[in-house]
Length: 245
Image (cartoon, rainbow, N blue to C red; front, side, top):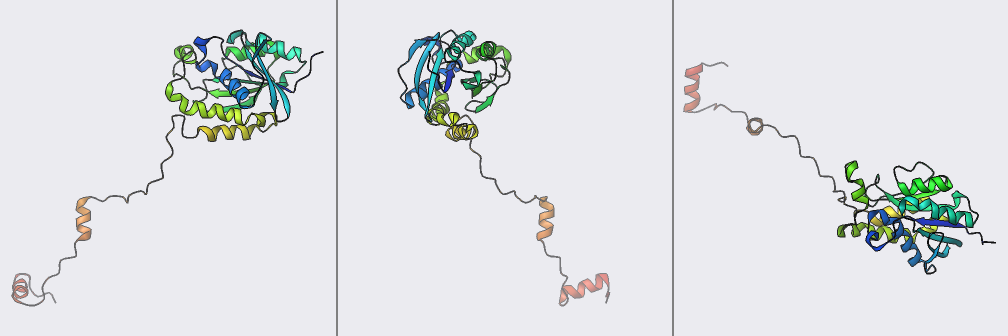
């Protein structure tokens, strides 16, 4: 009789060296990072995938990277859950999300596939009541470029936010086991703050006072003209304008 495990963590991607650095394979990258950081067992072939075992937060974890190609991920994940007699609520899936900006990470339980074929396949095999760790890889801007975008490699500049994010996922994976999802997301956000293409906020500048026209400025600065009261000039002005006293 198979031993019942606490949780199954599945990272999604496509098998083979040519896909290894694709944005679509960030789920594989997350699984690899967790296995390395927590000294999980070497990867072995099982359930139409690669499997590694270890412990997080005091609970046994089965890490799985389906080798069925993305569109058939549910075959591998479903087989693992059935073997260990687990409900879909024991499953956490790590995968790429184009509707999140690069470096953003969100966790949710349930929901739709959102156009992701790997998630659609898992939904079809085990239902949709599992936890999803969505890792933002950005959107190319137009629908026609989505496939090229996700099947394209991360750029060298992307490593500035990708590496800290993967490190944060690995460092804090036990928080998922413990149910501290908001804490996990905060750790991920802090790890990539200012590194995902966003410029740090600049301090607010003091607003300059409203400018007046140069004519008004000149008038305001000039003192009112003062007529002389004594002397030759005063006498001449009195002759011209008369004595108005």
